[in-house]
Image (cartoon, rainbow, N blue to C red):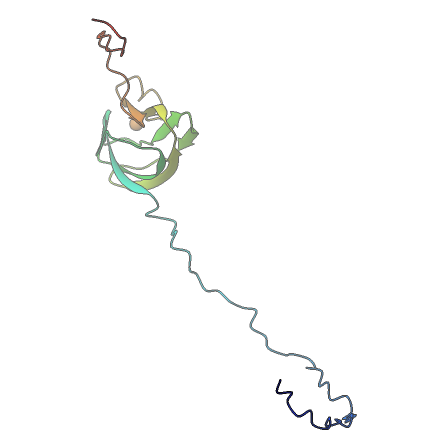
Length: 154
Ligand SMILES: [Cu+2]
């Protein structure tokens, strides 16, 4: 049993040291103007890039494989008429501005699974052949009729 010597308590004089609460007065740090653009989402180049070539009168897409997500279509008018690009499907309807011959524009869309129609909404061009269809997501079930249902047949 070694009881440690209990010393005399050192009575800490209550040093009423006055309230030195220094109030941080008027924090004048004006750091408000933070225009740090950490956003990598520029107005162009978002998502997957696809080129849509608009001719008289045909639309040629640089790819036919689409997955749900964001795409930026660059519509190039290589024809001799004004053209535009419209993409219509489950995600809604998006139309680019009309592109003069020799010019190009971009159209950013968010594609969802399903079938989309891509066409030129300028007068009658769609009926002249400026339309194509794309399928977003997994390829549609082949129109085959093979019943590979995992039944417990023989
Ligand atoms: Cu057109």
